[in-house]
Image (cartoon, rainbow, N blue to C red; front, side, top):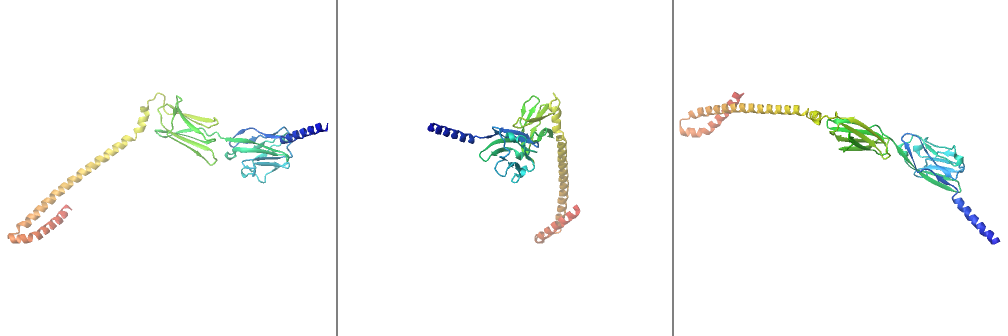
Length: 318
């Protein structure tokens, strides 16, 4: 009999120890989506239902300390709270005696996104769970504008997560962009800009979306339906070309005319120069009668005649 009682006692103690190991479990939802700038509540509770007023409740990311929010010894403790959450968190205690203790975070920012841990310690037992906070922002309505007569630009800002942009014509066909850029601003939100060459379609639509199926679009009529492209586009493309061409040709004509006038003046001067040189040299040559005298003095007289001719020519030309 004693042997049976001993066996029963051992089974009871084993089951009791197992019950202590699963005394409670912390549970929550896998993820929560919150809009940028709004308030969000991260749910957390104990299973089975029990009073947690005397337990430690710690919310943290990604490290145990500093924490997002701490409730211990029956009150909130902000001593080692993460600076980014200062004056922004509140542990909701309305149903704390039933094991329900969600955390409210006010004025959500991009930096608040990520994985949160909800941790509970009763002294004899502890448990924790994780919850993912996804911060989103639906940006501004896309704006389409003309960069020039051949190019369209679409831009939209304040998106989260990272957006993507598509162009479509009035038949729903996608148009490939020639340039696309995505940047982050000082609030860590995304701005997207895209440029395309002006298509032949009558209407154009710019749509900006993100991975959460959030989107905004804007449509614009770029030409009247059925209007041929040459009626408007060719005129706008070449309205500056023809005046520029006329000015260029006019400049060329002026340069050619000026060149011809300079050539004519140069020819006239050259003829007068040659005539003057011949006259001076002939006069010098007639003054020499003796051959020896002529041979001895021809060099110096030639130089003198040339010098005189050049100076006279220059004075005459002046």
